[in-house]
Image (tube, rainbow, N blue to C red):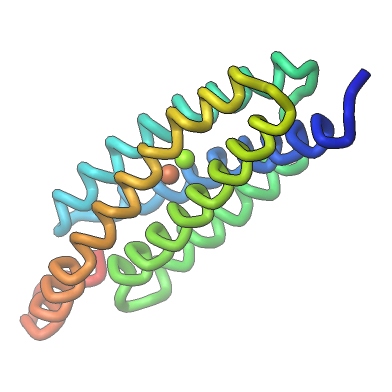
Length: 170
Ligand code: MG
Ligand code: FE
């Protein structure tokens, strides 16, 4: 017997899985294009590894609850990530836009895992709660890192943008 709460929990886990698929695509596109911001690139590459593990862990929760991941949600998320990644090609301040988008995205993830922790707790799903409590600090750490580095990234971009024959955008 599945309760309404458990159905909602499973649905939100599918959303979280799609979100992680989107994150992986978006971060990969961004890291690929960055050339002049090596610290940002390295931190993003580290978070891509974390993101892949998170997607696996969330999938484990879905399967344990007897569900499967939503191909439709995952495909939509990947298409959104593709559009987001490609938009960098058309803006002159790509690294700044990517920093803002990543910061916002990490906060979406933080809110999602907080919601999942509360839902799992109510359902008595100890394992899902534990998994989400393990993922949450990785998202917080990434969000904090991006916030700390944003002023430096912006100032470096502005300085490079003033310099002739220098690529600033990525
Ligand atoms: Mg994540
Ligand atoms: Fe993240």
